[in-house]
Length: 236
Image (cartoon, rainbow, N blue to C red; front, side, top):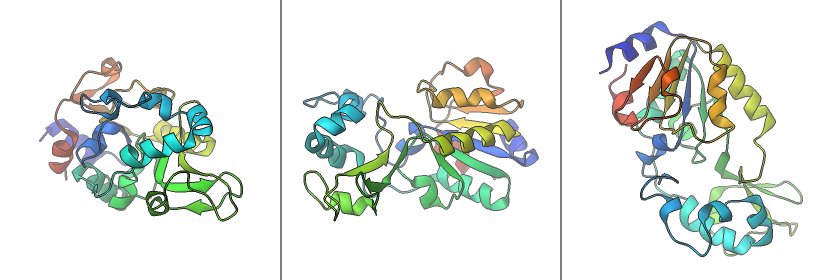
């Protein structure tokens, strides 16, 4: 166990966790940019093109063929990181989880205050009337899913070319700014504007847990190069 990390957790009362794809890979969800991730696989169009607002509007059938095949991962369960964070929230020492992931595993583990910067696959809505549909509805339809009103249903995820949700950004930024400890895990900190949010933290307990270097290593007060599930499984 990392003794310094464990001691800081004991001494902190407003922990915020900021997580990326590495938190989900240990639950069996592929990393978009990993060696075996979606971005290294071959399709008719590059994944970053398919997962754009423009592509969704112009070629919704092709979008949904890829989306159902690669984005709707079934059977994934929360790992020790998700579970420990939910436990900390229940104990009153963690104020928020800020995540770039769209899999909903933090809520599945029991976390309540979760700022999903890029949305979630569990939520889908009609672009005409606003009615919401769950992930099972999308999985069990073919082609472009349609609402009862005839409108096109869109996943409530932030596609390339779309803006982040204002209230979500505000909540995440406020939580980070008020934190007495910020733990960043499983992210390369290369995706903006989300990666820039950590600049709002003004404390001296900035912990970076990632297997590889990030552009913000020089800002961290503690760097841990172990798998994130292993690190959290050893914490109280």
